[in-house]
Length: 559
Image: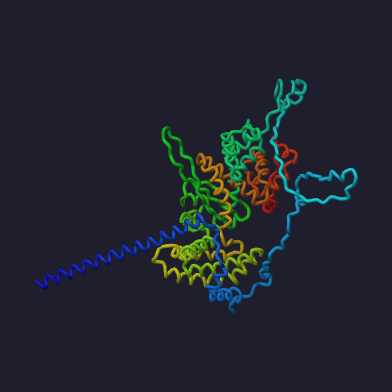
């Protein structure tokens, strides 16, 4: 009997121990989940209520990690004995100096109309003569106005004698009216300058059509937002030929394509008696060196869509570490089996952002040290920014490469410590470990940027504008908008007056040969415009004489 009781007691103890182990495991899982939720809550709170800039007190980091700071300084400045000295043509990095304050801006240097306000003393006026005036300037605003363009087409009465002499050139009989010039929007209400104005207001400054309608109504102009929307889709789709030509040139000759994407809402197809939520589409931006910026709308954010965008390109592609780009780097976007696959260039800003979240939100000491190490890399890159690409490449090999050779083994050690956990710390170090090859890639050439921030800046216009216009009416509307975003961004890149450029190409495109649309891209527009008669460009509704093709050598050097 006692043996049975002992066995029962031992069995009961075993069940309790198993239960305790199970409960302990569940408790640990809940505790881990609770800590992750706390991190996510703190991260969201910072994104909503705190400044979004990834600011941190570098001085405090240097105090905390004085030994690391000393080590980084030694690596960056005291080059190892086996490191080759810089070539003779590589100057030392320029010293960073703070620009001298210039004081109040001198408005007299600005090119603008001037009005004078003369202030006289009514007591002295008529008794004393002013000997001089003390002048100061203010910046004022005068409302501009819209213009009614009257197109007057001449009518000619019949002249049998002249028609007989010019029978081939004048086959008409009876009263002859000069035909309308070619227009991008035939029999339209708006002239090219007005079309360009409303499109720039929306696609550059984020002002939706319905708000423009109200603003125009306040000035006495009746123009409904439906008309503006139809013009936007028609003109955007028609100008896509220029964007396609620019994208084709970029895929064939660009050195590095930088890309990023953002989501937009697309209005669903209407169904009687049923309301449906908007679906999501995506705008991809691609920056081709300093030549072109083009946007492409894709209804799906998939590897297949990305492969179609980069089909046939074999240079460098800089992107974030999203999985949709993996297929491109595996070679699935090659136009032919013998073509080389593009090389991936990582973004150090993405890596730093994850480390910053781990340091500030999770307060991990190793993440704070990683921030200090990354800060040194960014500091050196800022010093080398004014250098030519060859010089920047040489200094990267001498100073940045040793820092990276020390950084990544250290990161691997930190990741081994946290790889079995989940949270911001494991995410930050895991990202750096998995992206090591891509993050090192910018050492290959001085032309490669260290970050992909320029792509994110290009997307800012869409990210800000969608808060005002909220959605696109259809995939076709979004594709047309992508063409307008492309031309506006490229015109800004090359320093063109965006509104003037759009107005001029809207005027010129109907006359231009189909195989020469690349000449109308912002990169080549100055050279192309100089070869079109100025009098024809000045009249926004009229015939255009197409010049001969731009010479290849001149096209290659045009900006």
